[in-house]
Image 1: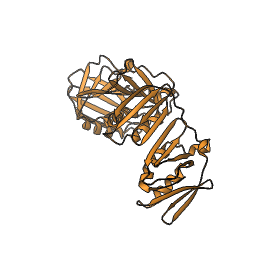
Image 2: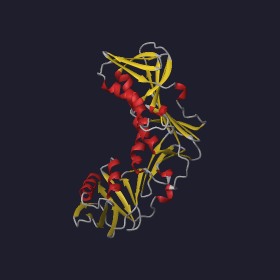
Image 3: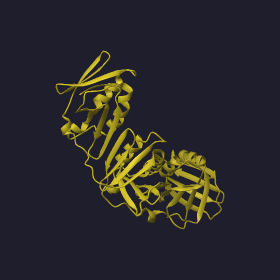
Image 4: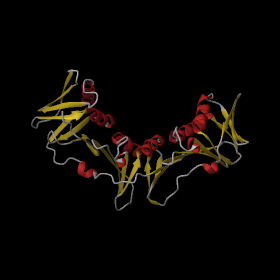
Length: 367
């Protein structure tokens, strides 16, 4: 195997592919990236056995075909440290990878390509194509609510649900829920649900860099595959039953509050400074036309804010984890937001004022 490539052309896919590779591996080959040259195409593959990412680069000059695996992070660090306009010459010589650029020369250890595991292909039960910007929006609007290391492993990921004309993403950690739906050209009749693991979702979001470009998605029994012009991403699915999110959405809330998103966000941020560092609780007091926000902590410190809102129902006092409210306001984009509440023991429903495609549920806190 022997090829030459511009530093920039190699670095971008290498950084993305190396992102999938785990630093601490039980199998040495898993900390490597698989390089394959076929004709004038170079492909780079990284995997941690759950998520696999393949990047493809067109070479400008004919190359000597072959395949080998090399330490991902070391190769990436070498590329990063070379000058921007460097032309890199890479070849395999006696089971070592020799990397040359200008007056620099590096020799890296290798492992045979045959040792590299591939995520086995299962039959796809549903194939669809979406604009990258749409899928990215779905992920950005909901991924913050995924659980991190919950024993209920099916919460450490995101539900993607496809039905006729609609694709929906739902994430919850048991204390809050985020949901976003989009119109999509899907002829699927019955609902199809998959749970994509947290790491898979975060890696997928990093790939969606061309808003006008399309991404083709295949949902199988055990895998999801997403393909763009330059990348093919495959992730195992989480085997489990996601909670029935429709039952979690609060129904029949009679207290409707309309407020300025930025003003609320700033008031919550300031109040949060003096909330209990562990529980992050704040108290909301609603009265006609105004919202009072209070926080205190074990050091007997207090914060209080008042924000003018459109509200003409009865008075209500309710507690929330302020981080959850800030996360929601942080992903919204409209000027006005609406909160729908019923009583101090019921979850709040938060939405953009003129837009129903996203919904956020936040459970109350006893203070």
